[in-house]
Amino acid sequence: MARQSDVRRIALGLPETSEGESHFAFSVMRGGKWKGFAWTWNERVAPKKPRVPNPKVLAVRVADLSEKEMLLASDEEVFFTEPHYDGFPAVLVRLAAIPVVQLEALLIGAWRCQAPRALVEAYDQGGKRPARPAARTSPAARKPGAPRTPRTPRTPRTRRAR
Image (cartoon, rainbow, N blue to C red; front, side, top):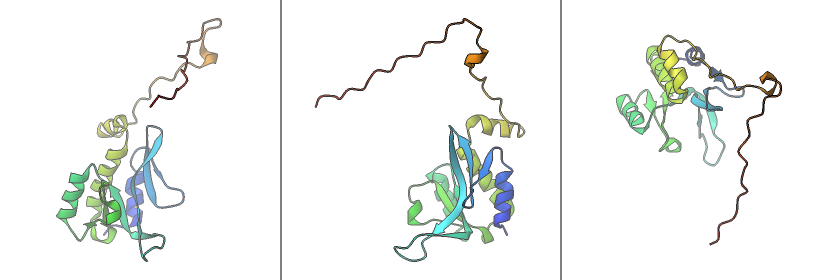
């Protein structure tokens, strides 16, 4: 069925996706931060020992806990979880048990959960990149002699009396 090479091909085919440098994980930039949507599961092999990456299992972000519960109930051979992921919207996927077509739909859904809205809308309209907002005028681009836009002064913080 699916392999890590399939995960890499599908994930990197999505707009503005990046693969982790030190581990098998995929993220998309949103709000100036990398937001992960799929990564190798780190399994606890021995109690009180560090977790070890298990390349046969992929952790995948889902929209919410109800979607997580739906996936877990849909196929116990493919989807599972562990206490570490309790209360967190992600499922664990056995790669050998999931068809590539289903993996692709799952990864696209995970990417959509983490990608910026404009990027998702552009993807839905045919995969084009969204138009970037106009850049602020740099000081060099202002007309000579034009006044600078004043900044709002910061007020110092004070301690509140108790």
